[in-house]
Image (cartoon, rainbow, N blue to C red):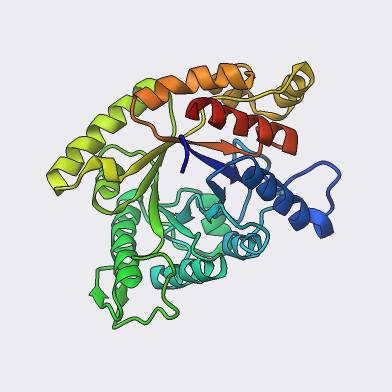
Length: 314
């Protein structure tokens, strides 16, 4: 990896003028553009309804692992994963099998993203249990333990309060030695960051610079308690910038992005301005950024984000 880690995230599958029959071709084109621009990872949401802050609940939503499997055949370099899978949606051993299959299909490019889940509406709609957050966190830890064991061991057994496996087979084995890297989503400072210190290879956080610094300090303390080198965890953040290639692109962004998001990240920036803003996050220990396709919705903007990566790598 040259320079900071850049992820291209696709939470949005609503594109002007794109009919359902052409939807995957359009999504694949965006993923290919991200790969051409030098991005390191392409991710999708693991949701069944569109989420607030991106669009209306009734907007299109593709299932994550079907989509990632198809994208594995349209890309050749980028890592592929969900940002992130909800622990309540699948038996964790099944999820490990899906991600292992993705690793094989992609030639060793899968990432397992996992979090505690939050969208109660789609749980209700699909008939999934939605326990209180403490119980979901308990499930998350058990799922992470199962994932680590099934990636690294031939016939692991685990008996937890919520999940169990009994000499579980995972064949074919992952192509990546030790299995795909694990990304734990969320920045909760009491439990989630402790799980990051204990199990994760990658973290992904939301927030401004002060929040990133605070979470980094807490994570380092947890790593010390766990006997782990914090440098072994790649810290990433949702990119706190919007990129525009000119006045027209800035106007289109202003029309598409919810006001809440615009207040958070500020006005659209040129690649040079965005690089200057992101340098302070790199100085604070953030090693990568995730850009979403609501902001980077065409090839031109994706390539402009790639220029930001090049500027930060210089």
